[in-house]
Amino acid sequence: MSSYKRLTKHPITGEWKNAWWIDDFFGNHRYGVRFSEGDDLSEKGETFREEDYEWETKDDVDSDTNHLKEKILQEIELAKSKMHGGGNHRMIMEMLIEKIKKY
Image 1 (cartoon, rainbow, N blue to C red):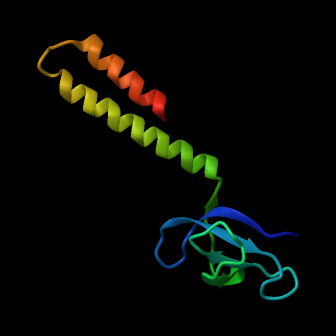
Image 2 (cartoon, rainbow, N blue to C red):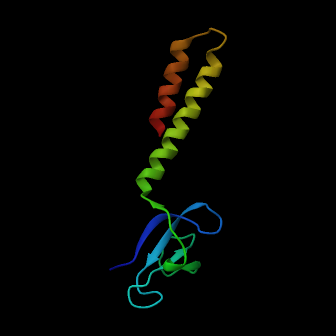
Image 3 (tube, rainbow, N blue to C red):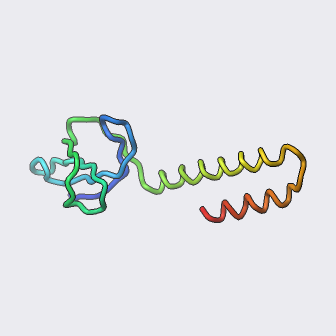
């Protein structure tokens, strides 16, 4: 077994955050789940015993994809709100496409 970083739902706050899953932290193959702000495993942070909670985790890719979908939907709604008065639909759609390309 080994230590790794994974997007994890905090057991107290319910927020999705990156957490280190640290092998052998509490004994032989007993994981500690550490929530810290940085990317370094040695940084201090709130650490929980894996066996004390039911954990929800997901891949960063899933999180990034969902975030991207939300941003695109927001941009589409903004574009729709600008189109209500008629105007130049082609120009608005081109602006929308350029914004989406940034993501």
